[in-house]
Length: 208
Image (cartoon, rainbow, N blue to C red; front, side, top):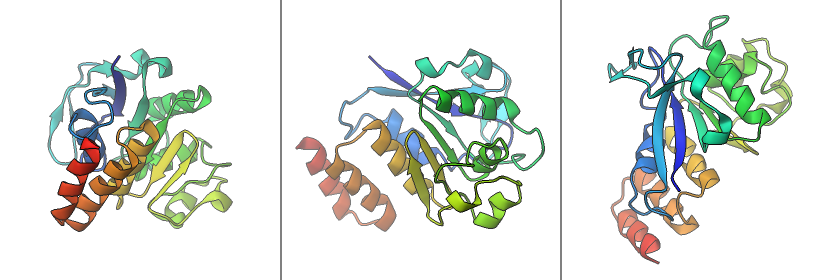
């Protein structure tokens, strides 16, 4: 049975932030269970064209009102334009809250963490973002729970700064058990260091 990971898309979403994660999920090579995952996009409304910050045109596969946590392996929420504005992306934030309430995983990066913070979703659990001062600007009550790290995992919630898309993807893969441990480490080192020796180790780990 295939597992679907949902990516929230909107006008001005930062397309590079979830790119390592979505590419790895959609590519069966080296996966523990090849072909298990698929990625579908979800927008505020279905069939409403959005354009990423990088100029990519995307038509969401479904609307947020159609998305149920029980039908999803994870909701990925990228950063981009508008997260700091009052009331911005409220439907996506509410959906993320619904996921967390029902024990379904949520992965938020960059500006999306500000949206979660303003909704009180980071007030009592370890998390990170672009900077502590960035989240403090939201007026949230989770300052004591902030961790100055590229990515933080707390149960079914992954948060990351916008400068850490690679680490963000690694923790998504770890939580969803996309790769065996040795393959995941080789995958990360390959893209972190750019050294081809890690590709050979990735192949060896996957074959084992």
